[in-house]
Image 1 (spheres, rainbow, N blue to C red):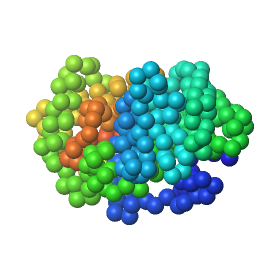
Image 2: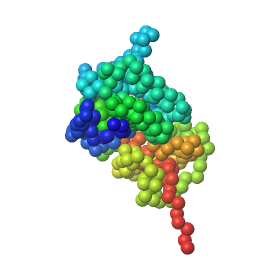
Image 3: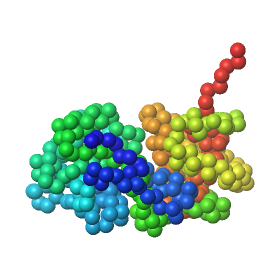
Image 4: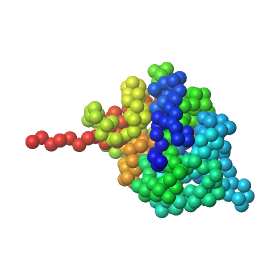
Length: 333
């Protein structure tokens, strides 16, 4: 039977078992780690993506999961990982920047990799899982291709494993294991105690960059209450912004008291220009948000103090309409 990955069940032969999420993980930790996971998947491609997937599966399944590597000229027979107890075979596709503009290449890889596995590993393969990092979704051609493979091999179950599949597997782990994969994240206590020194450092670096750009006029109209919904951000990014509003006033106060009274405008101008640049490339809202986040933090794991300061800064900019869009106002009749 063919299906996409079900976030509540893990296939096991002909039966399913309920996925158990770790109860020790708080709501705040969950959305921070979902953000960290999205950023990691966007950054990983090729072997790095396969390594990350194998690390997650190793933590979750121990020695039941076998990491597969090609040796010499023998290749990997279309298998990047194998779960012994269930006969699940995994094939990884890590696209650069978490996107694919070459649909034909993706389809060719799916067909060729399954053909190798079917020819070499039929005796041990009960399921074939195509693992990918295409955050914004798969092209319909990939869906129809997987369906075609299922119809040609009805005894094998076929699945995709994407962002949600990663997330559900990840959140079965303990917080210590998740932190070892994605780094520590801010707690509620961290959010309530924003480190001004960290905020000062982030703002200074952005202000230096801003001095090299021409400033734009800042939109000072009050933020619309439905702006989060209108911009169609994924829930974990919505929670990042809404969670940062409690500290947005501290960012405003910092800018008001800054020795350079134009610092706030300079930083806002940098973000607005970056936002317009990404929007002009037709990037999805989540892609833009990830890029703006990394504009502040840089690429890689981010310490909790930096997370809270970045969250507050982005919430302030979002609240003041420097980034993302207002819902168009209805003209009076």
